[in-house]
Image (cartoon, helix red, strand yellow):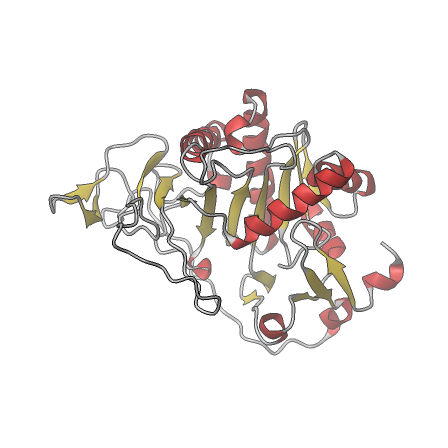
Amino acid sequence: MQEYFLTHPHRRYNALTGDWLLVSPHRALRPWQGKNETPAPDTRPEYDPKCYLCPTNTRAGVDADGNQLANPKYEHTFVFTNDYAALLPDPVPESVTIENDPLFQIQAVRGTCRVICFSPKHNLTIPQMEPADIAQVINLWQAQTKELRAKYRWVQLFENKGDIMGCSNPHPHGQIWASDTLPNEPGKEDARQKEYFQKNGRPLLMDYLQRELEQKERLFCENEHWAVLVPFWALWPYETLLLPKVHVPSMDVLPEEMKASLAEILKRFLSAYDRMFDCIFPYSMGWHGAPGVDANGSMGDSDAWQLHAHFYPPLLRSAKVKKFMVGYEMLGEPQRDITPEQAAAKLRALL
């Protein structure tokens, strides 16, 4: 990076989505008079009899016969269909007609939503788990992706961690939403990666990672198979991108030999996140990989796609101060103050 752009306002292009964002590093010097929020202390027990996700507990939903649902006595990971799913697998009735009005477009959508409990223990987040137990989560991510990619166009693995991210249950868990349509964000990534591959004959993110590994300005940490970096186009203050070092188009084809190193690097850098502000670091994260079957039942070409995970933490200056997307960000374009290079340096110091 040229020194000028580390201290002066500029825009950066997100090669993965085609979006631009404003970077204003000089604003980091301004006095802060924004809202401070005191995070609640983490006093969760290992088991909570009132938790809908703990083993053997009754859940909020009921089955088709009206019987209350309950969790089994699971000992590792556990997955179930969300009792209040945002997507439903039911086909659209033939009686339903949709007008093709360009100003009032509507599209039917089918899908399913599932919940993944990472551990039976109510008080364990992923960085607090043992690598072997994190590997159990990875195995479940892979199995679920393999099953759902064969049925749906898009499979979204994600986690909202912490009540600041709208997490509705403190038991550490993630979700899987699968739909027969391609959502907005992966749709943009699909277009940019295909465009780049057609022009260059290599996956965009493979070339991008190679450049990042050479420059090391935004590199957070790495191991034999994986790298974590603050992307050049990062929006959130301590946003990171997790990438495999070899071509892996989607989670369902992740090689067995890369799972242990994935568990290791997840524990390593998420533990560093927790040390940033001495708190259980909140974020929204999610995996993006090649889309699944289309409307014609074809899986399509995944050569252009590279598996990757986005981590979007909201914290800005401390555990009490978070970044808000307001004003210019909502009406103009996204904006950040500290540069991705500065954020990466701070994160590396925590390892």
